[in-house]
Amino acid sequence: MRPLPARTPVLVGVGAITQREEEPALAQEPLALMREALARATADCGSRALVARADWFRIPRGFWDYADPGRALAEAAGAATACTEVAEIGVLQTTLLGDSARMIAAGEADVIVIAGGEARARALRAQQRGLALPLTRQPDVTPTRVLRPKQEVVHPAEVKLGMVLPVNQYAMIENALRHAEGSSVAKQRDEIARLWARMSEIAARNPDAWSRQPISAAQVREASAKNRMLAFPYTKLHNSQWNVDQAAALVMTSVETARAHGIPEARWVFPLAAADSNHMVSLSQRRPFHRSPGFAHAGRKALARAGVAIERVTKRELYSCFPIAVRLQCRELGISEDAELTVTGGMAFAGGPLNNFVLQAAVRIAQLLRETPGEIGMLNAVSGFLTKQGVTLWSSAPPELPFGFDDVTSAVAQETTQLELSEDAHGEASCVSYTVQFEGERPARTLFVCDLPNGRRALAASADPALAELAMTSELCGAKLRLAGGNAQIA
Image (cartoon, rainbow, N blue to C red; front, side, top):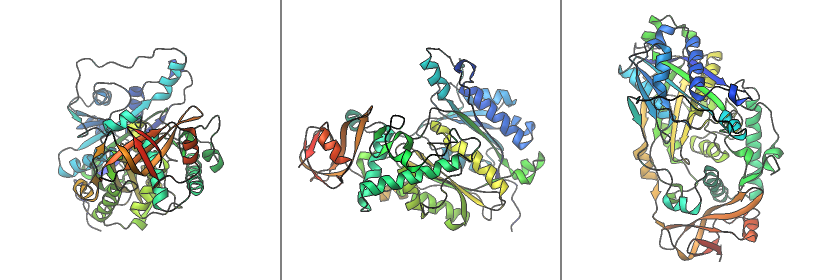
């Protein structure tokens, strides 16, 4: 084994908190939860002095509107001279992890804190009781740097059709995969229900999971008063649970600095490699529709950079906002759906605090890798509607190769066709995919993405109850449609 270079990046402190306070007036706001997570990460690494010398505090944007939460965390840690960053929604959490490790390896920073959190459950309970719970204000404060995505995730035509909700778009990808693989509606529903039931069993073993109650595949699959259908085939239990009070913090430094601060090597977890794709195409314009080439490229690149075969990865956290995200990662990365695909229990059960879930999962992966020295973990991320993809690899064993953070955007762009959208199409079309959108317990509309004879795409909808019923029992992908100004019917 090669001697560890002084600038080798290493994760030395992790902390997470799940707040379960039922009385909203007593519950802590997101910034307070982030402070607590950082306090736990500081205690975990065992060195206040290390955190006090942090160069950067990097925070992914949440539902909150703090001007510069990193500054508040820096002040709490005594890091008066630290730089701060807010990564807006649409920036991959892989980018924060990978770039932080890169900065440390390159000598651009020595200690970096990454933290984030949400208190949506607190806010929801306050709203239900008519309480106003203001958040901390930060007047006249701005972060050192703001990271922003290069463009909007949603196409204006998708907004016009009412196709903006994540559940609608992910359900469409799910249905397109079913058609591409020649499966049936019933088989698909059984498969994703079993997958999610297994997730709930793992969440039951995770002390930081939001929900620790295992549920059966039948409970996931079938709509009920407590589990209504949202967008076929997805019920409420298939969805990421973002009404949670959770926060996480990570402390990353160099091997040289970790040793100087006396942090035991048994606490070290090494980032081996990271890769992400920032190629952005709105869902309705993508070809292929049922694939995620960004994961194939990011996975191959990260594994090659680390000198690791996929079979050596034993701890996995495949991003789990909806079943199709997990299923496509399995296919693109060559992982069996029967394998253990999460260490947290997934976003529906462990909790999915918007832009912070990957940090929550990083805490759990680090904890488990410390317990199983030498094993390798994979932590994946998604931004948008499977729009961007990221892969990071971790191990409690020293790396065999230098860390690398690769951008595979160009390779993904070459493999993805961006089709032009026609916003007022008439005449014949072929259904690429669809979903049935529910309002309460009633199927309200069937939404379609269509291929046109001229090579363009079009979006359409139908309010016909009979068509909605057909769509939930039969395969409509590939069906011939007739479009008239945004309305669709079977040809």
